[in-house]
Image 1 (tube, rainbow, N blue to C red):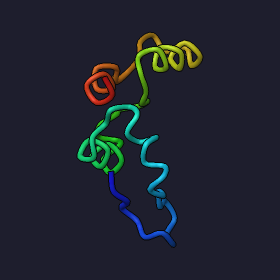
Image 2: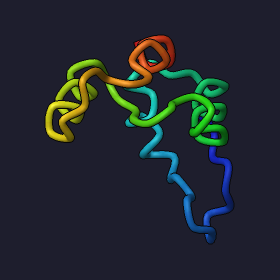
Image 3: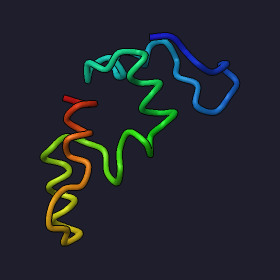
Image 4: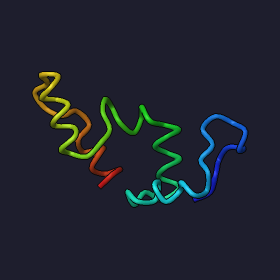
Amino acid sequence: MTSFCHDDKRGYIPSESTKKLEQPGINEDQWLTMTRQFEQCFSTFAGNEHQLRYACEKLDYQRPSGLNRCKAALG
């Protein structure tokens, strides 16, 4: 994965930190789409199924909104 910001800009990711971005198994194109179009990719929450269900339980939602989108994007 490459850096998308200059090293003097906010949001710059040093090359030694890119392994953390690669661990979830998200390729560069998916990462760019999810970060640039976050609201279109995820309707309310983003995370795995367990995290979405936990958030909905805490917020007293009946079901996790956007679960299928998160599964498709994050596995």
